Each structure stands twice: as C-alpha cells, then as structure tokens.
Image (cartoon, rainbow, N blue to C red; front, side, top):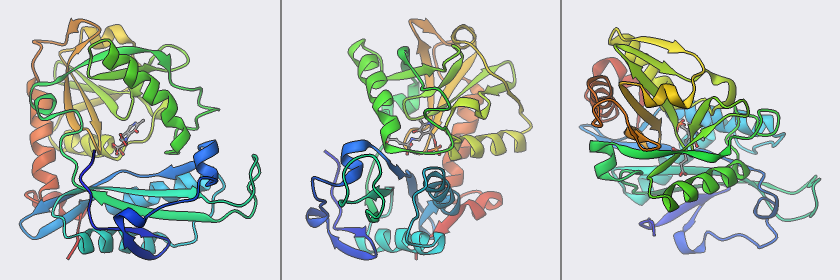
Length: 305
Ligand code: PPE
C-alpha cells in the first residue's frame, strides 16, 4: 500500500483522497488508452522542489498528441496544478502521478466525444527498487517478454496500456528470484527495464541504447548531461545482452528507480558485483543535484513555495 495524502487534483478541483473515484465504464479502464507521467519532488534547503517539471509536463502533452487526445488544460495550468497539489498535501518529498484518461460515454474503440480527464496524485515513495538496491545494486533477468514493436508501442509516448508487458516481465523476473526485468527489442537488442532506461560502462566510457525502442527518459537525459559535464564519454549504440554480462558496470535510470546499480544479469555478476566508480559518481551527483546542492543545475528544479 502506498501512503495516502489528503487531496487529489481532478479536472481543476482538489478532492479528498478517498473520493477521487471514477465510473467502471471509464473508457481507459477497458481499453488501456491513457497517458501519464511520473515525476519526483525532493526536499532542498529552500523547501520542496520538483525535478524537471516542465520537461515531464511537455512529455505528457507529447504522449497525448501522439494518441490524438486533447488535454483540456495548458501545460502551464498542469504545471501549476502539480505545484498546488504538492502544496495542499504538505509533503516535502513525493512522487507525482499525472494521468490523462478517457472518461465514460461511448464504449467500443471510437470514443469520440468522451471527456478527456486529468488527475494528479502525489504520495511519498521511497526507493523504488529498495534501499539496498539503491546502495548495493539489484539482480536483473532478461525477460522472455519483448518490448512491443515500435509501430505498436510508439516509444515517445508514455501510455497506460504499454505497462501490461512491463508487468508480465516484472512478475516473471520476481518469480525467478530477481528484482527487475530487462526487455529486449524485436530484433533482440537490449531496450529497457520494465520502468527504467539502462546504461552500461566499459572502462571510462558510458554506453546507452539509442532512442529507437525506448521511452525517452528524462532521468536518462539528465545522466547524459551530468556525465558529459564530468568529462565522461558516451556512446549511443544498440548492444546485446552479452555486452551487459561483460560490462564493468551497469545501472538503470528512471524517475521512480532514480539511479539504481545493476549487480547481476542472468546469473552473471557485472564487474566486481558491486556498484562501480562511474555509477557511484553519477549517482552521488544526481542526488546532490535533485536536493538542490549544485548551483549549476538549479534550473532543473522548480520550488513548490
Ligand atoms: N522506460 C520506461 C518503460 C519507463 O516506464 C520509465 C519511467 C523510464 C524508461 C524512465 O523515464 P524517466 O522517468 O523519464 O527517467 N517509469 C515510470 C513509472 C514507474 C512505475 O512503476 O509507475 C517512473 O519511473 O516514474
């Protein structure tokens, strides 16, 4: 169970958490077409601040555009609604979940005229893959499920229905005694985790998957920027699972997962089996940035006030 907060924002109104309900004929509930975001707010010396707010809201609108959903609010209104929801709930650190969903009206696959609803919930959410995972790394299994073809799951969108495959992959990984799944693409190359992007390190060079078949992660982009600023070379190139086996280091990035080291893939220890120096450097830098301790990256933070 997640920890409840007091209010949830729905279509412009703040309603008590337990009253934020929908009808069972909500279209998205049946057919999976809804778009969402995952954003984090961290406590800084100047109070709670949202990490890369405008980029996340932009991606929410991009997802809606791809799927021909017209959000009845502007990006600025949604940004303000997010800040307001954090404020009324009086939380210092939280995960933020904006969801755009098709309401009730027509059933069937052409819901013309059904309302497009927007909800924003916030709740405290600790380390997604556990505190131990964040510190010592997690064990990952290559999934028997593959990431859908890019012409089925268009990867620039963050869509509710896509997460059916992610859930299958995650359940399989956990049933096999692992912490997380790694999905390959339709051609057999590494794509991403059930809810994370992946990086590997060989020597001082960082490598990550090109944008072909992955969600364009905002944490991924942040790590690319941070790494470049640290003088670390990055290669964007497809790689195979065995390249992960022989990498010196590997880690996942994501809003929920933050920077989580991978210590094993399919029974092979990655490098020393412990988070390596490049992973640790980037992880430390990342946490220092989100907590407002790095002047240079303050523009990535929006104070809640
Ligand atoms: N790939 C996928 C498939 C994905 O779901 C996420 C985020 C990422 C990459 C990383 O994107 P970004 O958060 O912008 O760095 N997954 C979200 C959902 C997690 C959940 O369990 O819910 C998240 O991290 O918020």
